Length: 113
Image (cartoon, rainbow, N blue to C red; front, side, top):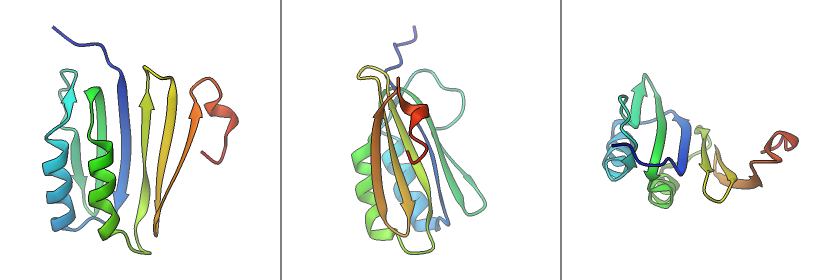
């Protein structure tokens, strides 16, 4: 029996070291997905990719784990689509961390999101 999807999380970060990937993998193991066939976290060369749909994803834990590892060379983003509250929050990794949020109704209006 599948659960109602209330959260979708998609993103990537690069470059990712073995140490950082192991930290992300441990945190992603706590996600409560909706019967996904693919793993939540995958590695492609120096890029870690997150793809999740389900009930719970440890967003704050991921951001806290990334913070001490982010340097000027790191690039990527983490998009969190909160279906229940109808919001998209984009966390951008570009030598630091910044976030923007918008209603899913207006998300295409915000090119900077």
